[in-house]
Length: 260
Image 1: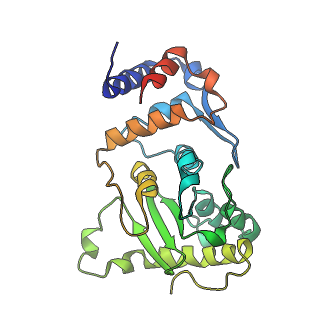
Image 2 (image 1 turned 90 degrees about the vertical axis):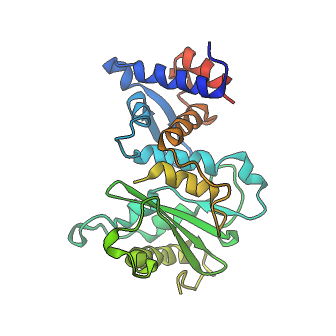
C-alpha cells in the first residue's frame, strides 16, 4: 500500500479513473444543500482530472462553497465575501441583449447573504471576490470596498494584439458592466451604500480566491494544472458537508482518510 501523500493521491486518482460502468458513472458522489443544491456525479468528478476539459461550473461553485464555509475563515480578522458564479449567471452577461432576461435585483442582492455558519454583514467586508466564466474562461474580480478599487486576476496572458496598451482597458468594459450590477445589488443588500465601486482557468481562479489578500497572492499558488486538479479532487472528496458520502466506495473513503 502507498504511504506518502503523493502516492495515496495517485492511487486515488487511478482507482477513480478506472471506473467505466455507465450506471456507476451517473451515481451521485457529492451533494450539498447549503444555500442551493449542488450535485456531482462520478462522471463529473472524473472530468476534474481531464486536463483537456474546462472546469465544470457546478464543481467551481462547490469549490467556492467548501472554501467559504471553511472554519479557518471564522478566525480571520478581516472579512472577505466569497461569491460563486450565481451573480454572473443572474446578470445574464453572456447572452445577446435581445434575449436577456429582466434583471431581478432582489435575487441578485441575495448573493451577498452570508454563507452558512458565518456571521457578518456585507457592509463589514473589506473584499468582495467575484468570479466570472465566459466561454469557459474564468477570471476573478476582487473589489476592495475600502479603497473603492478593483483588481483583475486572469490566469491567461494578455493577447499579443493588446500588448503595449494600458492593461485596464482590456478589462474595462467587463469591469464597468459588473460594477454597475454590483452597485444595484449592494443598494438592496446594504441600504446605506450609495457609492460607486469603481471610481478558463477555473482551477487557477479557485486558488486565486484562496490566496488573494487584496494586494498579492499569498502564498504563491502552484502553476502545475495537474497538481491543482488533484488537490481540488481530494478537497472535494474530503468535504464534511457532503450528503452523499455513503455513495462513495469504501476503498475511496479509506484512501481519503489517509491523505493529510
